Image (cartoon, rainbow, N blue to C red; front, side, top):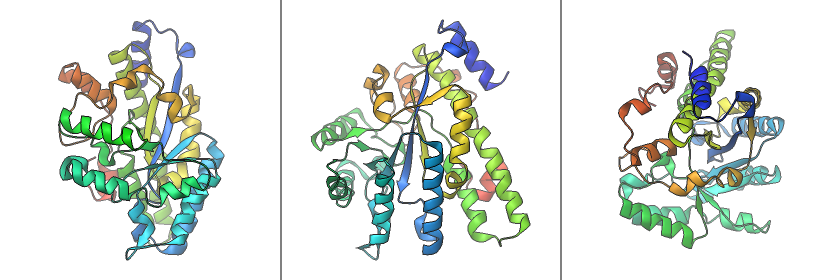
Length: 322
């Protein structure tokens, strides 16, 4: 039984109706701006890849919130105007920008006080940049989706974010997109530009979109089982070479699934998001759907069947986890 069939079967059991009647909505968020693994790229290539991603976003024509790590704006501690311009390009294209901390800090590893300092350091450029356009930062994204090991830490962070005018951007469709992207960038950066390299890149592009759709199907089914309906989802991606080659194709394939792309703000209007980050006290960063399931003490079988990144992709990515 395919994950897609399983999702539709669950929707029917839940009484939501036929597939054509399901209200499928999804918001796109893109992390690690201005660019993931930025310092591994030569400057001319960086600009070309950045422009390729913006071209893909324009072609897809969907709302996007991008999350900034301001340490990537610096070289030797000095902010680089060319990299700030990359953020202006996102704003010029009509996209929102949010705070992803200065250094991509792990809250669970470093603790509340260090994280708060790093977070505020991460708006030194962003806040005045948005002010130029009469805007203020609204969204924050936890690096690694790690939101605090205890209820007390999470409550302290909730108060901190509210004090500074931020809302937490959750992730429901978690995925190993970053592993595929590491593989794609490694092939681009380390292999000679030959027909053999293009064969591998094509294999990665062709495998990536179905993988992401399978993840979407899985979390749709999880939503129906947990909530009784198809939650407006929040998708996690990154600013990288793979999305610079495939984003528009992925969006089109998702739309053929019956999804409408909406703003993060619209998705967050669903009452399920009022549950916040409750339910998970571990060191990692699972989907918000899985956090909520843990809060309800769902059995281990609830989490079974999540699609995995193939071993050959992990090998190219030089990682053994996802």
